[in-house]
Image (tube, rainbow, N blue to C red; front, side, top):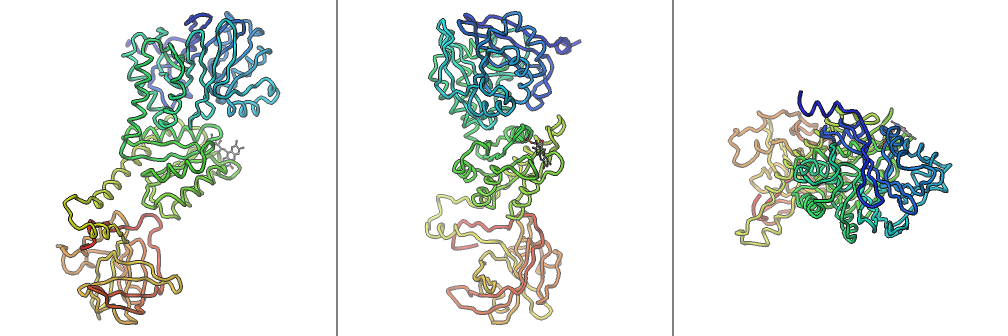
Length: 578
Ligand SMILES: Cc1cc2nc3c(=O)[nH]c(=O)nc-3n(C[C@H](O)[C@H](O)[C@H](O)COP(=O)(O)O)c2cc1C
């Protein structure tokens, strides 16, 4: 029997120990993975740490979730007469923790609940009967428990825990860090004396929970750094006494590492009950494991300017929503508006969400992004209620495949944009920055069909719909420079290599059309069925300018052949050649 089997067979318990003057830790331990930790467990169990400070006043910090309610309260009763408890301090709230609070609050009937403002709002909705006993605190608010135990509160909002609150006790110099500086590992050892052994678990915990919110974690670290802490008391895993500065340094390094990744994805979501947030976290894990930085935005907290900034800066974006009353929450609708107005169409996009029965919000997001012509980096993820282990894995894989797709498209774009320092003519380089849609222009000469590749095309008029094409003599200009001449403009799709049949150096034969599937348009010219769309055009005017004919033609009719996909673009190094 392996050591691991032995460990997992131990029953849940609550380990109690004194960690400083007047201060106990109560570690609710499970040697197996907890269900709600599907998202970040490495199967080494975990501890849900709660702390009790007993000075002139008594404060209990972070009672555990409902899987421990009974054994935790039984154990706590050995050390505390509930009727004498003055305060319950919460680092964050979640639905899972409410069950324990419900029982504790009814027995500790003198106790006031201390938490951040967002947590207070959520708790007042959950426990309206206790509204007067819930007290919201702000950063730098203090609470004197007597005997030197002066508590200072620090709000540390992150996308995942908008209501995050840390607490510093001046008597013991313990900083109660809640979700920061934890690890999911269950052992008898209370402290981190053998901290090198904890490295992998700590790093994994950070990657799963904090890497997607590195920016906000850095802000939190800054706020916490002003306290002369000698000990971190986290919500999970060993109490940090021996590796405080090393662990703080690691957090800073890990945050930096995220920000230095070459590619970054904006992950926008809202989540009323936490399910969409779990899906977001799974996708984030897949991205992070594949070397992509993730900037999470909880749309319920973020200002529009912040969303705009992140969407502008990212290489790809993924947006997720719950469906509530047949709709996406207002904040998601606002974020979608910002995305549609801000994100370049070349950015890779993704959609996900948790729903109950109809999932309209997910459909809305998908259809708006598809209509706007964004390319999706994975098939839209629809999860009913809470993701199972299996679905969680699938979401993670979707994140991984988004990362791979992002790398591919980025490579394509940068390869085309590289300009070497040896190029002499800056003007040419500057002109070369003009890009165009890659098209094949087909004309007809009697029974013979011709096709030329060009990106020198743009819309010229709304009414009638008209286009402008610049064409060289050798590009069959004679077939399209007279009023009344007909042609078809085939607009090519990114990722399909149709251009190779029409390039000047093509070795694929003189007649490109034998290799391609075509239809004949009403005007007699060929439509390439692999194109994204096509326009049937009639020439109206022309001007000979420099080495080109400038042709103006009206669009008689057109059709989109594929609703998914992006227009292929032609990037050039110089304005003096194609
Ligand atoms: C008040 C309320 C209204 C809901 N309305 C819908 C709905 O119209 N369509 C649907 O598919 N699911 C609906 N649901 C189910 C939620 O979409 C589902 O619980 C989802 O997991 C919530 O995601 P979240 O945990 O990220 O908030 C509703 C749930 C609640 C609580």
